Amino acid sequence: MKSRTTLKGNHGFTLIEILVALGVVAILFTASSFLNFNSYNRELLESEQETLVSVLITARSRSMNNIDASRHGVKIEDDNFILFRELPYDEEIIPRNSNVKNTSTLDTVIFEQLSGEIDNFGEIILSENLKTKKITLLQSGLIDW
Figure 1 (cartoon, one colour):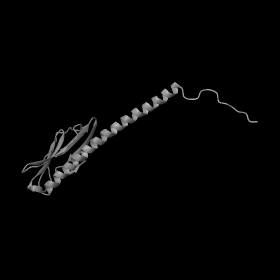
Figure 2 (cartoon, helix red, strand yellow; figure 1 turned 120 degrees about the horizontal axis):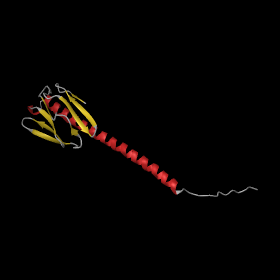
Figure 3 (cartoon, one colour; figure 1 turned 60 degrees about the vertical axis):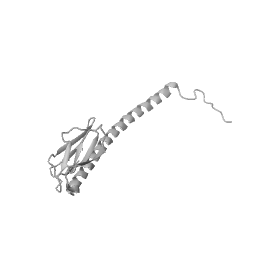
Figure 4 (cartoon, helix red, strand yellow; figure 1 turned 135 degrees about the vertical axis):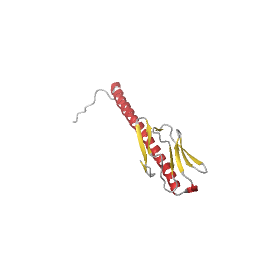
């Protein structure tokens, strides 16, 4: 004959166990939110750098290929990149993220016809909060990022 054993006691979770589990889930959720926000800011800065480099390369290419027999350049404004042709003046406006700031004094770059050289070479420094990205412009017109 088999003996039957019945479980006696509580069936379920206590209030304290539920609160501890919810607390652990809340801590994990909060930590992952901060990590995702930092990742978003890093991607935002990298995207802005890639956009500016692309605009600079376009201006340099147009100058070197003597498109419209004119110099081409880029002006960095708070909320736009301006890709322009000098004579006759014409511009293309490329919207940019105003949260990413240009913290350098270099805000306009003009590439010479055929050679692609520039007079105002230096670094463009983009920053967002404490993170920065640099784009180096050499006198030869080389763009390094």
